[in-house]
Length: 194
Image 1 (cartoon, rainbow, N blue to C red):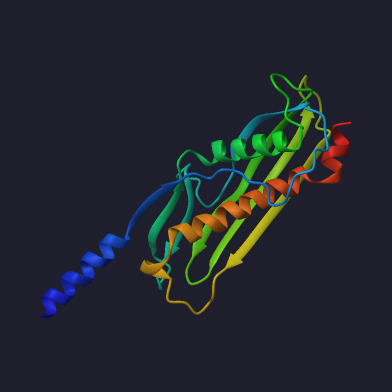
Image 2: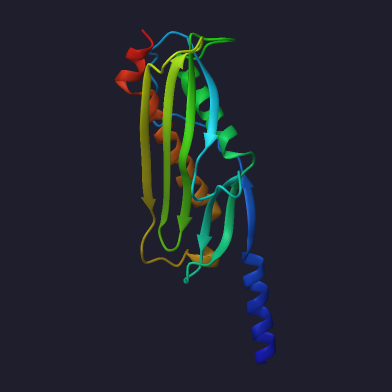
């Protein structure tokens, strides 16, 4: 009987382990206001993360009671491509995206892009963005924005092996969208394009 119970628990534990790949499409956190002319292109996007640098697609982990990784959440493409698409879509939604070569090149450093769940779900996304003339020269604007969201309850039955990767994806995606919007909605960003 004990062996059957131990085998059942082992199978349950192994079934809960694994990696899930998901899409991470940008969606504005509020209705974007067209504030600019189509003069910006997205140039380099660089991954400078401490957490996740060993796996270009990693965005989060559900952990067990001892902090051990149980379920991994990955984007369906590298985080740099996810962020490039998010900024491209964000610029397009605001009427700032140039077709072809623009007057300004937007470069993005991904400083943090991570989500975790031990009991509560938490996600942090941080970008350093540089806006420079496309023909070269010093940046006209360098900004750093960070978004952090915490969700769920500290007392929950949906943690560990019962944690939902869909819920973890939702908070990671919402946090990314918020960080992109914080950069693109800055008054000094729109002012730099004039």
